[in-house]
Length: 181
Length: 395
Ligand SMILES: [Fe+2]
Image (tube, rainbow over all chains, first blue to last red; front, side, top):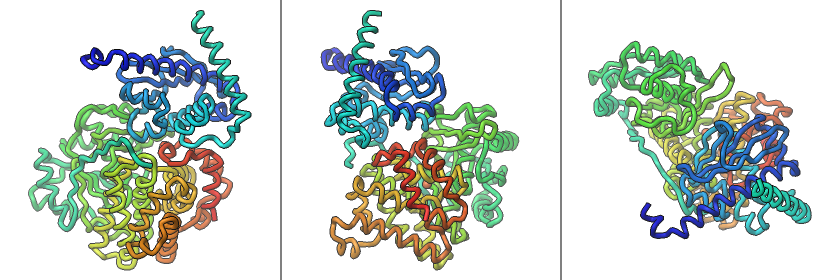
């Protein structure tokens, strides 16, 4: 706890940032699953009611997503309604920050042992691909290049602009809904 | 791809070389083991490989309390439960696995049950479930390929639910791996070839995939050098003890490399092919390796080019311009495959195996996309990419 007293602002800012990005990703994941066929096709292989969680160890911020069936996701905020089926856990808030500030690719973070998978590896591989596609959609191209292994070839600029705008809009509206609720 | 961060872990004592088996009694005594159980399969027993192990122990007054020699090629929950029952009945206190991947994986799982209690191995499936060391455990590999003696993983089939249960924990690692050239001296040619190609794939993928790091690189390159140096010599002269030892050590070194750096698309495709077409794992590796390297080429040009030094020797490396080395490395692997085809008809394409139908390629591609190894492949392989690689490997 000493370090927190020494560097209160930096540590808290990092925490807030991770929480915020989890919210953006959660909302965007739900939005993208309603419009993007690639994501839907990937997600269809997940069982209905499948709960996916991304969290920071030991009990930090988290992001919970449910597969409603037919490739659609619902964002559950940070609380899972029941035990999750697949959990991807960052070992430390610093590692979550590296990945979520797009300084380290998700696949590199796995390769670097920054996070653990609890659950079926096949589903984890699938969720990683979905997260990669999400990042390619919601981030500017330059940033996305750094975040994902390979920039999707079928994500051309007009489509990207179009879809990204739609997602941002959806994210924004869902944010307002959340704030109001 | 340079690594800015990595972890490397291998706490297995390696006991390798001539008369290595004779170190078992001393090493086991050091861990307090007095009544070891041997876990092996019928093939190992039939090949006469148990005798030197048992003799080495008995000459030092270490009695083998029990021998279970009926591990099937695809081990299951029931087998693990049965062996654990025998272990308890015979009041054993240590395990010696003698065999290939299946015997070793089974022994790892048995060690969980006899150390932690219970009859249902499924209760321990997953990562990080185990929290403390298990019973003393030695591995004596009888193939030179899987590297299972240095991996912290075991896979056991749940035949009722027809799923494969993965177990991951550093506590699964044996206390020691005993590499004795006598154990691989009688391996038939096509198994020698296929398992060596598995080891070569472990080293090559560890060296070219995303989790590569300086320590595993050192093991990977040394393994590649030993295999390309000794494999064909051993194929020509199966009783070449020195060559056998080189291959066995290379397999362990490649195992250390990939257990720290992971593998990639060759393994993802190979696991899927094994599940659907029941082709031996090493054979799948040998078939897919050049095609996957070609697919990954532009992202792995530098490390792959570096491998030419270990695949083909310093003269060939020096004579090849830097920008052609990656292609030359792939050619060297193709030449090795051609030589193995000549010596023991080890298939080079899926068609040559005679056991795969072209109509199965779609299913193989789909299954490969769900394999954990694909995560560490340097290129993000899509379904179409995987399908295209399979098509190239078809004929
Ligand atoms: Fe392998």
